[in-house]
Image 1 (cartoon, rainbow, N blue to C red):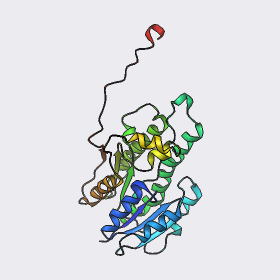
Image 2 (cartoon, rainbow, N blue to C red; image 1 turned 180 degrees about the vertical axis):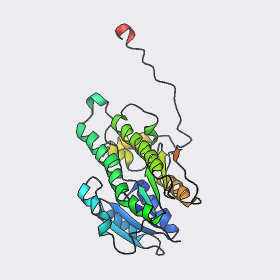
Image 3 (tube, rainbow, N blue to C red; image 1 turned 90 degrees about the horizontal axis):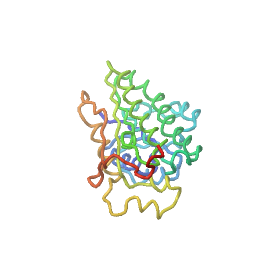
Length: 256
């Protein structure tokens, strides 16, 4: 059966790559993002074998998300796969120096936006007794690092929320998967570092990071498995990345 795939944050990065991967299989696509012009450009380059509906959407706008399903045209309303990809990180400052506006933007997008989209699409999946929600998390949910504070917390929410969905959906055929990428080269660092291209490039210097296409292939794989198979969580890192020793500070002495 031909699937209809809904992807948030589809104008770049993982979302754009997922759109191209599913389009290559002839799936119908509902692509959402704040940057409509970027979506329009993407749509013109996709396989002609798939139908595409574009919708400008900011997942932090509760009213817009609430009206989302009603605005979908006939033929695009029965969503088979929801890829909750819209998300971002802002800033690398330690918690006591961080910008509270940045923290709230991450929560509004990574947490509230994901909840809102899920709440809009999930009832239809349950009623039709088919569907798959794929939430894009992060290794930052599991392995904190300096500056990860609110971002890591928001992605830890994604993991636990997804687990809660699986518990609620027991007895239905609806699947839920969290994909947790590690070091991946997209616009992520450029956004996080607020347009500083030099610093953003430095994040990936002398590494072979994951690409957006790597994650898109992972998303496609988990959704193409037999319907009785649910991949709960998949953590994905490039081979150049790993876990270091537990951090120890040796400067405080007897101060503590």
